Length: 461
View 1 (spheres, rainbow, N blue to C red):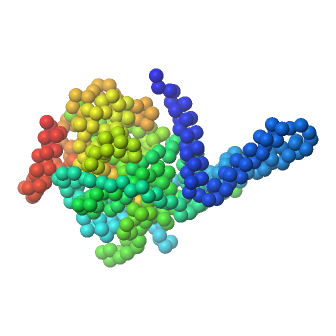
View 2 (cartoon, rainbow, N blue to C red; view 1 turned 120 degrees about the horizontal axis):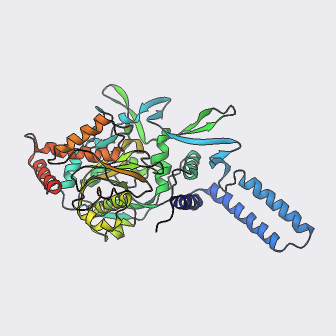
View 3 (cartoon, helix red, strand yellow; view 1 turned 90 degrees about the horizontal axis):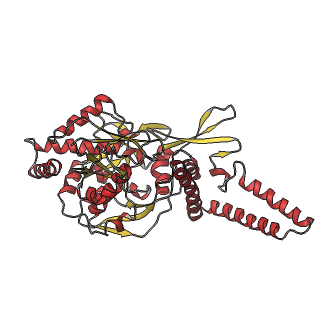
């Protein structure tokens, strides 16, 4: 019998604080010093208490307790004072932004251009004409078609780690996020894509590395956010704008001042591999998973299937295959089964999942995301109204039966007409299916028609 949700949340909050302590001890010298001092005073106080036999021991314990009170503050915390979400009577909070602060100017993230190497691969933002959500992607159909055509996607794991801390404000940001009792956050071990998109089309193995979720918070999440604090009048004011660290540069494009991702921006931002799969239910309809407020990314939005990121352990779980696509499709299947509470069907879902493409998440500093589609076939997702009861709180279907690939366009129209708050990654997985549906037209190349036939057989077979 699973533990009650409140105990799961309590454990995650406790684990998140412990993970943050270890993370800061590893990477931040100031935190390491503060924690060592606090630990030593605790030892002295414990020793004095254990050996207490005269008034001098009482004096020693009083001094040690006073040091602890000063060191821990109120509310008590072993974090350095500069990092605490509540300090000296001032409360700090964070909020995501849709604009980038650069040289005292403001630029919308939706208008950020791809890095030069990825611009050469025809990356663009397909959502500019229709903005279904606040966030924006960069995608290349050339790259996606190549990914679907190539036989394997070889990879090589590097063991290097990067210290992404550039500012104390990043540490305050991560402390605020971990201290949030609603969106509990642990430092899970992830797999990072360390490279630009041209690596997906080359002959050399793609480089992947072990990374940690807190690295993503320090960079991809922090650099899209602003930190607020309550002033003495109780009003909220901007304390610092972390979007100034967004990995972009200003240049003139089509006669206008614009922003472009810098070359090799992946060296400054943790690129944990995101995965999202569009799920076609046993009723041949697209599923809707309504996310709860405890979801760290995509809270209160709708996913059209599984969505999350690749764990480093997925390499082993997938059997250490030579093809990175097998690792990615395994992670897609795992995320879907976890969201639906259908883990017993994992291997079947894995066989029924295929990768369809890749995109960059602009708002998360070019975060790499792989997309795919899962056909439930005989797995009773809809019959059981599959939800995990944790991050996913409700399940439904979009009332469009998929008889041909063109019907995915009807699904997109339904989302638009009913203003459903769908997460960006799910929109991109659906968008990819509408693009493939167009490969049946006269203007499609022979390779595109082959992709259409392959996907049609997978979806409709």
